[in-house]
Image (cartoon, rainbow, N blue to C red; front, side, top):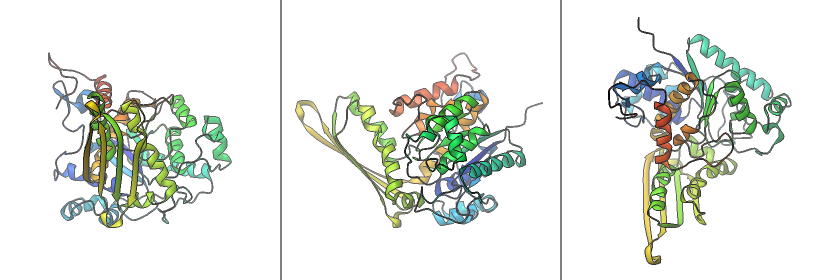
Length: 416
């Protein structure tokens, strides 16, 4: 008899946000056959003669079960309606599912994200109690939904960074003591990361917040054999940088300056209107260029401005100054008018599928091959990650197909 499909839970921090509601609605519309698989990077991928899911054990889109936390307790239909990403017809088609999902009370802390607040807060005093509440949610979700796998995905608003050198963030033992002492260097996103690792649940951080990428939690994930990945999803402007910068380097065109600015008006933009949260975001966006080019770009400017009327329809401008043969100067202008959540949601879905696959394979610790998805990929030893998109893709596909069942005499490792 054929085996029943695996059911994999996706526990999302920030379930009521624009990216999460778009992802949930997208999965439902895909299940209903109301939309195609455009934007999903692994959809339709084959390994040899087999669909990638059959060849590798990658969970299918239909087998993902969603739940999670949000500071706003409104059901996902109301949340999605407010965000305005889906058109009216899509919203109505997805309404039965969206209206049935209500976020669980969240472990928030206004001190770390001042511009995004809400009343749907877990009743827990101190970090240890918050961890216990999140762990209980994960156990309940796994049991009630009869899940075969579970991944926790952080899609929450950007937090300000604590001091990365804080003593409680250096070892698992110090982190445990920090939880008991309610150490404020432990952020809400670290609460979720620690809870996931402790429950044997894979963890991925799609935000710029400092989370599982501190020594204490990297070590804990390695000890427990739990896969972790992140941080900060690479969607629009930074994706373009990781495509263009390798081309400039390949053609020996010197980047003299690169001016980048963004305007957006969604909840993420509102969070970034707080200078402390904005600094966290700029840290991840600004590091990519020098690593790819192999030299510092002195005049590399990155700006992000909250502009409410734009909503989720983000606009990213780049002005690039190049020096070529005979010292002649040239310019390139890029204006990317994109839908922030439309770019981010499918990546979030694919990350969950891949983290679950790593868990099936028994591969714990930092999942370096998932760097393709992130602006600031974490590394186990703190070394500089690969940022060039084409190299990241090769590493991802090599890993994905490494345990595949190939068929056919000329099986292509990964083809469409």
